[in-house]
Image (cartoon, rainbow, N blue to C red; front, side, top):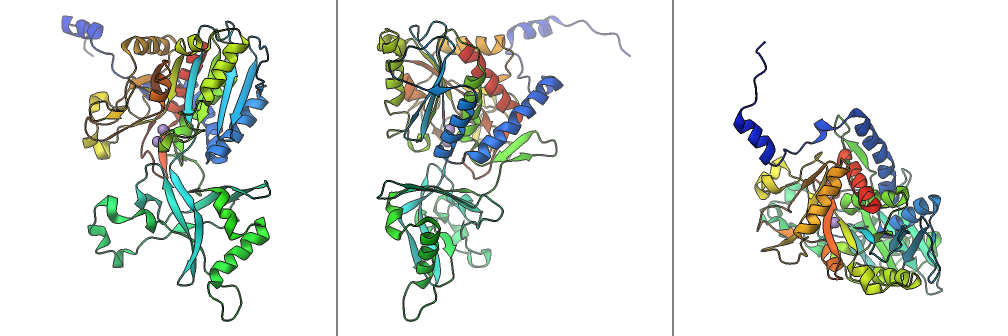
Length: 469
Ligand code: MN
Ligand code: MN
């Protein structure tokens, strides 16, 4: 055994001046790791219950109501600690916990999105070809098309009838349900196909869903397989072919979220982006103590297609909610919004050693190193990003350190490797301080995405610290 050596001057100086090495999972106590695992059991349940934005809103509403949140009433005087929620068109939900000082000094915003990449049905989807019945689809969000062929798919959504009634559809989730799939070409005959670049291997019009093959019994008629499918749908849902015109029907992977790895340290699932931030943000709203400033948690739709529309972040829905709260407290709406601060709760790309060349190691986020703060997103010279200010970054890292939250910073891949955006810029445009904060994800936008349980829990701890501030 050698005598313990004293630290050299260089060593001491390094300790003082270098950015402390990212700590990672090794620094976490068993108690905290258990808390993370426990938190994620419920997250997995939320994932399975919430594969579409409508389902995520219903799940969030049920969790919020159980925790005492009441429907928001415009003009009503609320007191500190009151918990309210407001739903927009079944696809957005806002939850607010009224602060001790109300909203006059601004609100604390956590905003996540609850839509994920998928295949949607076209308005006129059903057709028959060579005695097979198929649905035409139109993909939603940024997908690698080949990933969506030859995997089990479930059909989720609603069909609105002219009578005003809506029919809920969810087929492919129960073990006894049928599933659907987009067929792929066998390797034996794919000699030409596999020579094509990945982006051209499948076209959007080739993502056709197989839905049936048996004909309706009848002589001399054409399209009997299609007729048989419509007959089944009529018996089950009382719909006809025309009713597809007024439907929101989405195809999502038919499997459940599962623990991943021998050590069960990760979760493999469809739709982590961005339920992996939506759920922790929701639970922070549910579990936070009465905050100083009113805490507002928003789950939005349409992020994956640019945040447009009345349920996306570019809608005035959230703004009007805050203006409405300000009005009933006698505060100026613009003052309230411009004094607010926001965590744009979204995922970042975790460093993947198999594809190391697209990442810059010093500025990437990693699985198991905690929640990731992303100062800016965008692409090609910071186009399309709001970028958080130095001052707001300082405030957030101090908050995370003060609350012992395991955190790291990340950039979305190498400069010029590609890029992407979040809802941050739309909130920043309202004159609000915003930074992206969320969970690192492997295989982002694939039908099976991977996250670390510890990182999910650290996201929850970060939102909780932020709302409570
Ligand atoms: Mn996202
Ligand atoms: Mn995304």
